[in-house]
Image 1 (cartoon, helix red, strand yellow):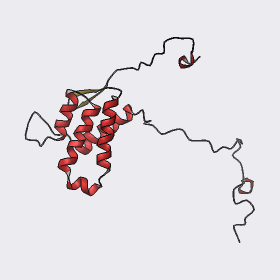
Image 2 (tube, rainbow, N blue to C red):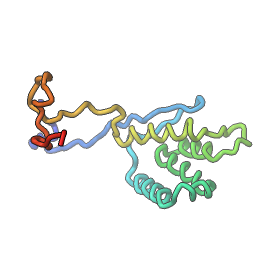
Image 3 (cartoon, rainbow, N blue to C red):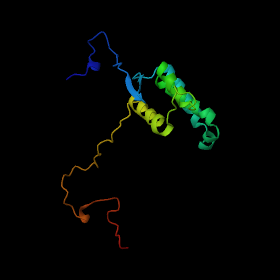
Image 4 (tube, rainbow, N blue to C red):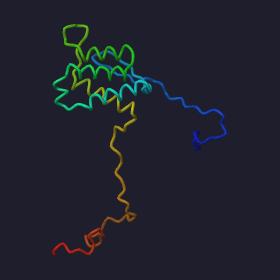
Length: 158
């Protein structure tokens, strides 16, 4: 099979990507996120992460009123539109509004962020296959004296 990207005879190169949104639910409410992050949103996301990383954990704990809205900002960048605004509002909800159920940070928000970033960043979610050790031999019945190492010739009893 030939690689369509290597077909130089075609005058038109198609860079289209599938646009089916990522769909997820929280507490019976359905949300949709685009499969790609808009370039402008990627820049904003980088700024938010830079701002957060510039501070240590103690600063974050001492300034939760500043930090928590940052989580809402990230959600709005990853889930643009009404869904992102709703998620951000729920992150910052205090429970006083029965129509705005607060999200659980550890049980809902953090797993959601990891899930979205894995899918948007195309990060593998399964461990990779074991790597070869570079050996070309297929036999497994070797004795310790058959193995050559960087300490070959050095006596372990000296």
